[in-house]
Structure formats: C-alpha cells, structure tokens
Length: 342
Image (tube, rainbow, N blue to C red):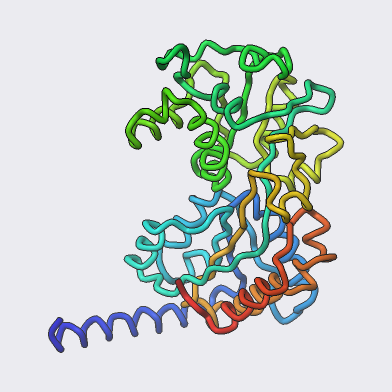
C-alpha cells in the first residue's frame, strides 16, 4: 500500500472512530444479544450490575441464538451494533474473519463457565437411558441395516433398543441458529453415528453427510426459539424428548425428567469431573472498540466474571452455571483487564 493510500485509510478510520465516539453519547446502555443458554445468566448478571453500580444503566439482554448474536456483533463498530455477543460455543474462524472484515478488530473472548446438554421428557413419561447411537438412529434419514443404508424404519424408541420406552419417537432439537445444536451434533450424533461400520467404511465427507442428514417425516422438530418453546412442545405432546441445557432443566425439575447418557446422570459434579459426556464451555464476546465509549462495558464484564457473581456459591451457580476454576477465572479476568483480543 503506498503512503497516500495508507494516509487515506488512516484518516477514514479516525473519522469513523470519532463519529462513533460522538454517537455513543446518545447511547449509555450496554446492548447484548445471542445464546438462549447464556441468556438467563447474562440477564441476572445485568440486573445485579445495575443494582450494584448506580452510575451505569442496567444492560439490555436479548436472545437470538449464538449464531444470530455473533452475526449482529460482527456487523461493525458503532451505536447501532451490539456490544456483547453471548454464545454457547466458541466463535468460528469464519465468524471472526467476518468481524475483522467489518472493522471489528478487537474481539475479546470471555469464558464464563460450563453447562451440560441434557435429554429430558415430561415428568411422568417413560424413563430413558440413552446412548449416542440411540439418538442417531432416532434422528437419521437413513440408518445402517444388514450392511447397507436404508430409509429410517424406526417409529418407536423400543424398536431401536428394547430397553427404551415403547413410545413414539418425537425428538425436539435446537435449530441451526443455536450453539447447542453444534455441540449436540458433535458429541451425540457424530459419536453415535460412527459406532456403525457401514458408516465408518465411507470416506470422511460421505460419513458426515450420512451422520447429519435428518429424517423429514415430522418425528424430528427443529426449535428456532429458546428452551421455553421446547418445553411447550413437551407439554403439548407427552411423547416428545427435548434437548436442553442442564441449567434450564435444573430450573424446571418439577416439570421435566432427565435421561442418562452412557449410564451417567447429568449433574454439576459429573460435568466438572468430565464423566458426563455431553458438556461444553459458555462464552461471551466483547467488542473492544466499544470499551471506554459505551459506559460500563469493561466494568460489567469484570463484574460478570467476579467470584461474587459467577464463582462457587454465587448467584449464577445457584441457577445452574458450572463455575470456572480459580485459575481459569484469574486468566479470564486478566484477558478482560488487558483487553486481549483474539
């Protein structure tokens, strides 16, 4: 790039940041969007932040799923873009590249804790002891049989395995806009699928296609909304098995019963130990360019990760967040304090 062109780019960047600083005076509240799993934790942290820091307004927290929140976050820098994106998975390389191409250069990753993904049915319905291969066989468009792939013939769980309840297969899973969906596919569907030699004998691309292709006969329902929509499905159809975050299940234990996965009950202790196989870290992402411009942004992030808010014995642990270790917490606080970008 020649010097004239470089000077033009620098001037344009400076003008954009100056305009943003002026515009930011018109917005004095932190805007957050993203994961429905992180939503309740973020909402509580925002409320507590507003109660404890009277000089700042209470942050506004919206949903939209991990993918939707990160798309909003990466749209650019300025008052019309969100300051924080909540996510139940790590940001993907293509999403980070999209941020950078739109001028969001300072993407600060904040791990807040851990959660498990659970399979739950309506209280009083059949009891499920699931293996990953059971879920794959319930969901797949084609399944292995006698050395070949055939159209999925299973209509009842007991046809997959006689130990499972003799009830219709109806599976409510997160839509593709949810971070939970990616973890569900990686740790349940792909794990179960690759138990079958008919699939492992395929090349890697064909394996992935065979594993993730879903039946279209109405027995698998993708939920684009949050977990309350999945819960409504269970309440309207007692045969439905839904996919939830552990924290949501813990808040609705009077209405739901949870399945074991690979003979392990999903509990906080089993997730911390690594014994329960379907767990994941939770995150939010801060737009570094907005720190020092949107009032309270860095302070909110530090408050969220503080031991008081999200550590052991904290208000967020009480509602189902599995806390970071002390060492992880200190590392994350340093990342926020020093504005370490990805």
